Image 1 (tube, rainbow, N blue to C red):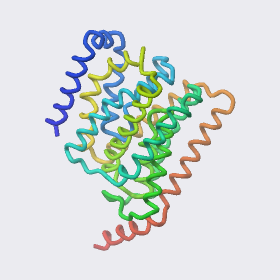
Image 2 (cartoon, rainbow, N blue to C red):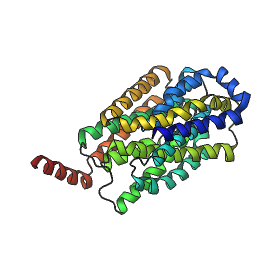
Image 3 (cartoon, one colour):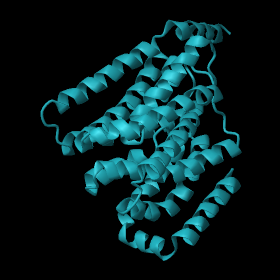
Length: 329
């Protein structure tokens, strides 16, 4: 796996150097803060259920004062490289995936992100997008905590698979795509909650599965901006060129680390990232009017959905039976 990751990183780096030329080197010097940010962001994007934008977006909007629409587009652009590299590494090295989640969720997610980029995102103000982004990540944290409390017994695949599961995967893909069009992440959170809480699939399988799904969504979102909306230009391109060589190495490295880390370590890392994001949003992002109430209601609603998934009887009974059988044996 290390050899594959090295080959991917070197290939992307050479393409960046050849096609970017002197402009790319100049962009690193003038946007070094972005390069440093994506050192950590690329590891997170390749090795956890969060995209690299989960680090890049809040740092750009809160610390570097980049407008939310530019930060969202940058997240799409840089995740296309970083998470794309991680996905190639995951598939090439045959990391276990729940392929049915990808088969049924990805097409709906592509439709969702396309519609969201064109019609929903342009109508939201920057502050609203920042709060929505934080609510999505807090939702991921709640999904992790509730899952470990109410649904501790997991398998490496969806044990029961019928029409209901297909509909749920398509619905989660569509909703996740709509959210991803607003904040460049969201598909990973929605599908993570469904797979871990609803279908009781282990995080070590769900994590690379959501990386692949978010990569597909990211490519669709980036193509929508670059080819349909034609707004991939100016400072966003400069920031992107400054970060490409970093994520080309960091994201596959994150995917490699993911296969070496235990379930508990992955979860703890996510808890820390989500806590930092939530605290920084409460302290730094203004919540005029009823935005604070909407923020709280969004988190509460996702909490209730997570509890409902975790207590879904169709999956609770088989796993309780397995747990009892293991204890008696």
